[in-house]
Image 1 (cartoon, rainbow, N blue to C red):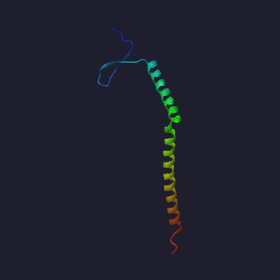
Image 2 (tube, rainbow, N blue to C red; image 1 turned 30 degrees about the horizontal axis):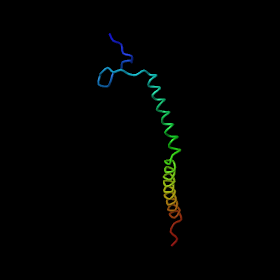
Image 3 (tube, rainbow, N blue to C red; image 1 turned 45 degrees about the horizontal axis):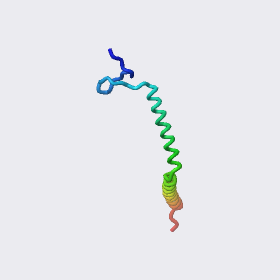
Image 4 (cartoon, rainbow, N blue to C red; image 1 turned 135 degrees about the vertical axis):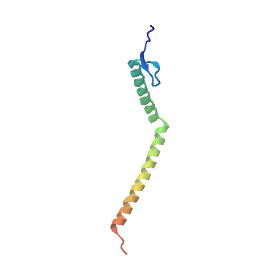
Length: 83
């Protein structure tokens, strides 16, 4: 009987497949997490950061305008008609 270097696992269709050891999966996950952190730092240092900030400010301005309009409508309704 031949032994695989990986533990055997069963796929959803019932076929036996080799699964990598847990340490390999752990190292892969840690490597991907480090890659995300590095890419985040690069994004903060590049021109993309300025563009993202302008977009966020634009969205915030629209949210403030909508909120102020809602407040103004509520105040005018609460004040009643003065005719």
